[in-house]
Image (cartoon, rainbow, N blue to C red; front, side, top):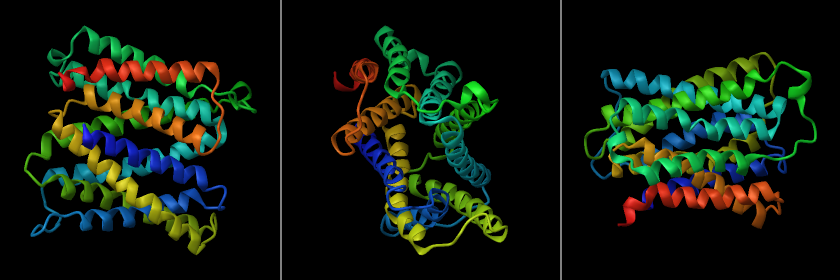
Length: 294
């Protein structure tokens, strides 16, 4: 449970970073690209004594590289969707994507035997809570006058695919003690390579302007980014790679935590529906994880 809580805390820290970017005029795209080398170096710092990182010729390396590309694409797609469709549609698509890995875990990975009626009730409440917690009024709803509705659909699909793949690769290939960090570093290398290529192309086409502050902004972004992945992997290990438990708790926890930070620190206002959604999220968490406490 501690690993899961830490993963949630560091994920909320990521959202705080993004919330502060406009205030400091940070180019979020460049901060995302530069955060991957920071992630990688953080991972090297967390390698156990006597252990070293090296790329192997195992097939898992290629899968991890592809997953790294998927994470970059998902981040970038989320950015475009947020700009074109607004925060509500994008946030909803992001968090509701937990349906994909949970469904796969239950139907194809034999985890349904571990679920009882209270867990299924909690899963249903979690989905409703996600919707209620992320609904906000948008000043400009572009969906009504454009065909860009496919952007949040793409966010839903990409987050669903990457989360499911992440869970599957962890279950299939992270089987040795101490293998969690090297596996995560391999994923980050894929993200770093693809992000660097994408950044170079955009710079060459003069689609962005270089500034050192975007590199500096990558430091407080990259460190919690790596730690959130690391502790999510550890949480999956603790719960026997059962994404049906871990991923709903993770997603709901991030929503609840980020909402509290938004209200207490950034003075954001919650509607009645948002507040009821947060209460429902707490109940969903209890129903989903009560076995861990008995």
